[in-house]
Every structure is written in C-alpha cells, then in structure tokens.
Image (tube, rainbow, N blue to C red; front, side, top):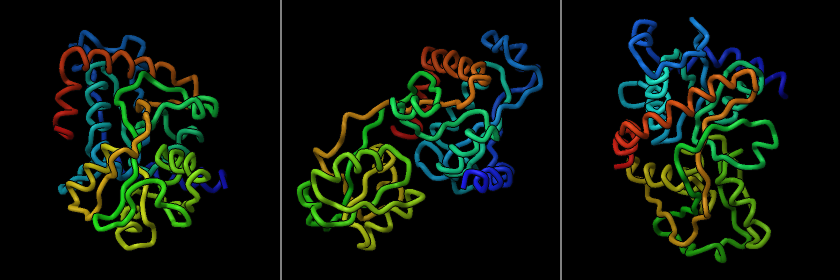
Length: 264
C-alpha cells in the first residue's frame, strides 16, 4: 500500500500548487532572512485540500487559509522559497514520509503519539479543541445518546482520535471518511448521527456553508496546539526557519492580522 501511495504522491505533487516566499533581492533586503537557507532551494510543503479556514480553495480558485498565509508570511520573513501542495490529509502525510515533500502544514495537532511515530514538530501556532456536532433537529444532546449509533470522523485526525477514546465508554460505532465535507454530508443525510471535528473548522464550515448543523456544548476536549511538521531530520533548517519566522510574525503583529482575517 505504501508503494502505491508513493506512486500516487509523485503524480499528485504536480497539482494544487500555492507558491510562497520571496526572491533573492527581497531576501537581501530582509534583515530577518535565514542565513542558513540553501541558495536556490525551493521547499515543498504539503497540505490538506479542505480544512477551512486553515486551507481551502476560494471562489477565484486560489488556495488560501490561515496555514497558507502563515507559511507565506514566514517565508517572506525568513527569505526562503517554497511551494505549498494541496494534496489531502492522508496524501500529504504520505508525501512527507516518502520524501516527496519537505514539510507539512495542515492543522496537525501536536501529540506524543505522532512524535513517537516520526513527526518532528515546530512550536505550536494555534491552540484547537475537538468537539461533537449533530444535525440542528437532532435528538442527540450528549455522548450518552450515542449508544448503538454511527458516528462520522475524518481518518487520521484528532477528531477521530477523540471519538475513538469515547467509543467504548459510550457504545457507538465509528464510520471513517477521507475529507470533512463528505463527513458533514453523512450527518446531514442521516448516515451518521454526529461527527467529531476541530472546533474552529466546524464553526467556520457551519457559518460559511450555511449547514443545518450545531456544535454541542460541553463536548469539547482539552485540545492541543497545531504545529508545522517535518519527517526527516535533514530538513531541520526548514523547521528552524519556521520557528524563527513564527516568533517574528507574532511579535510584529502579522500573525494577529492573519487570525483576524479568517476568524474575526
């Protein structure tokens, strides 16, 4: 399966491109430019396809979002070139593991489990919780109402991990989906009674899509910060530049501008 994924990644990397960074002249003018950056190198950064407001395609066909803007701002601050590839969650992780991408930014929660499996994380750039969502007219009021019912999650996410941690205690079944929109439709169409998703993503999706869904109060976990990740220690330079740039854009106010732009 990994061999098949690797072949698919090679083809997929040609799609979903969002260039970032500045040119050599800009870098010379940037006092914060990363002195250790490999001259002429373009870093390939993999991302999800739809994880609004962190990454998504706007009405003009541009790949945008909090993660995209943060990487662009950090690339400008540190003076490096990069290409953001919109691949989908599983494909993005596989591309990084196969060496076809240098890093990943896709609303990835920093967890011990991921660290133990080879993820090397940056400093956290956004604190997010996971929560449960149901249809607006649902009779489900809490975890206790899920017994014997199907619950939707997105494969490989912290929302899925949260649901899995509650499954045995509350006796529900889990149905896995490859992307968030399909998961939401499962709840709207009655194939599942609820779904588990990152709270800011769910709130944005409900608002922007005018979805007949509601986030249930008192169902959020403690959450964890999102982090940029590399999967090869040889890319430590990229991680160091991300951390340095993140600190700078937080200090100069650019980070707050990005968050306000998408979350208010």
